[in-house]
Image (cartoon, rainbow, N blue to C red):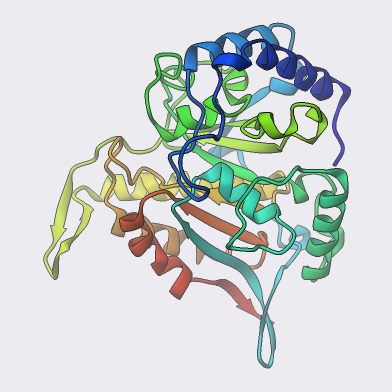
Length: 348
């Protein structure tokens, strides 16, 4: 994995400041191994360390505002065309997985583990050798390996459902959202605070190219160059839309206003299209607003994903894997429809 001198300098400074507040830091030390509740505590010391470490950081915390209306159509000639195997040959498309009792950061570790072992979800360092082997794995899986980006092809892109009015919302106040969880465990906040707020619209988002995850700091405090590095695409979800009950099944909730459904699909298109334009082939998605904070109707959101991923522009094999990381079991039961019924594919 290629890392810039600026990124190494930031990581070293971050480690130094985290060392200084280590007595009051507890990282990944609470809950069982597969518990989604294991997270960073004591936000004050962490925020202090981050503010100090970010003081002189410029390039590595850069953020770009992206807009779906500015993105040109994806060029099929530039697609890697990842292959999906089956008994008589293969199709082209993307493997979709759904993980439960796990958040996006640990899902990223799962993707990068050498054998995708479900029984071992502990973080592994994103070492150069791992990225080399991952890049080889991606090349072996593609019809056109020359179309795989040499840097971003092996770098996971996480989707952050963001607050679009202020950086990370009430992160420093300790609010408990998926966005604040990412910021508590990474350098994402340093990137977001450089963006122009408010930036939200149905077609806009933020791209943080290099985000260091230091959740494994206690394990790798002496090896800062091995701390995980990902990209994060941030966008605002539909906030608490009106919902209705499906007339055929009272247990299923749907968007009451078709406009909210259309807005949701536009955000999904932005995520997929921008990730493809930047060469990311490995994606991690969370609940996409289907939590207590945004209260989106989970059945409709899943169907929106299926519809968008089936669109001609996306289904030809731009991505090797998309993982949905769901910390709550009830959501897994709904989102598992993606795993059981959904491959994006074009026949050979």
